[in-house]
Amino acid sequence: MLEVLRVDSAQPDAAALTRAGTLLRAGGLVAFPTETVYGLGAHAGDPAAVERIFTAKGRPADNPLIVHVADADGLASVAAAVPPLAARLAERFWPGPLTLVVDAAEHLPAVTRGGRSTVAVRVPAHPVALALLRRADVPVAAPSANRSGRPSPTRAEHVVADLGDVDGLLLDAGPCPVGVESTVVDARGQTPVVLREGAVTREHLGLTAASPLGSPPTGGLTAASPGTRYRHYAPSCRVEVADVGDGPRRAQALAQQGARVGLVAAAPGAQDVVTLAVVRDADDLGRRLYALLRAAESAGVDVVVVEAVPEAGIGRAVMDRVRRAAEA
Ligand code: TXA
Ligand code: MG
Image (cartoon, rainbow, N blue to C red; front, side, top):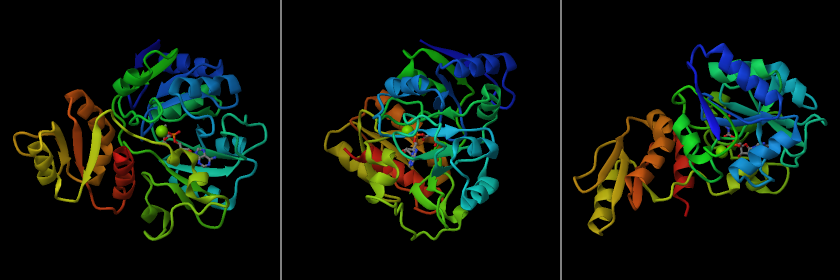
């Protein structure tokens, strides 16, 4: 069973951190908050511990994990070498929601890297995550703490709903402030290549909106960031994307055909539609999207209509997740 320890999000209790850090060092699982989503962590250098993550999530073995470290020295400890671009991006964006793919140090277990020669690394910008990483004093492999294919967890309750049976600890520090996962970039070349859109935007990275997503050395986008090829973020009800401003109309049309319809849009729906949330903008939708997809399930709707937000800034990552949730 997952044991839940409540901690303050700004000043986490030292005793809880010590328990969690000790458990990580000993090969156990600890779910913890980051600024993006909750992660399910294990000692990245301990293959048996990392195996437990794959089993708990039902995650395909060829989908590598992000290794979380406390600072840029942590990157050097799991990388074969730190390329100049990675050093610059780390300096600029860490702690923060940017994950850097670099060549992996040989000692890093294959299971952590999903069998690849590279490793994805980030320093999370959350006081609880940082304090835990310092306490554990080992690199911590942590995918999002959901069952594989489900919406990522942005609150501790979501972790309990998906992984409540798992042996380990959960540090509950309330909702995650960003709500959309980190941007994954290949940092081995001259310029960052975005493999997964995320909270650090192309604008932040100095890339144009038109720069292609992941032109990897081998085999197309899917080979670049393996996780992007699996069904993702999907609740048990259907998800439909409406155009900007068209959510209420689309929801109403579906309701008139007899469906029970949930709506997430900038304006509320008509009376026979379950308005799950009125969202202000892309940031707001990003923060709440995964929780709303889970709320749609609980509300028992057949379909949830999510109105699009403009695809600029974080809106690009948010719409990537919305679309993927909507893929049947
Ligand atoms: O914000 C986040 O990134 C959260 C928090 C917990 O840090 N983590 C997260 O992990 O979203 P996960 O496992 O759900 O997604 C990791 C993504 C996957 O798409 C995976 O394929 C990709 O990163 N990835 C991991 N290692 C990689 C590598 N060596 N090369 C390319 N992509 C990699
Ligand atoms: Mg995930």
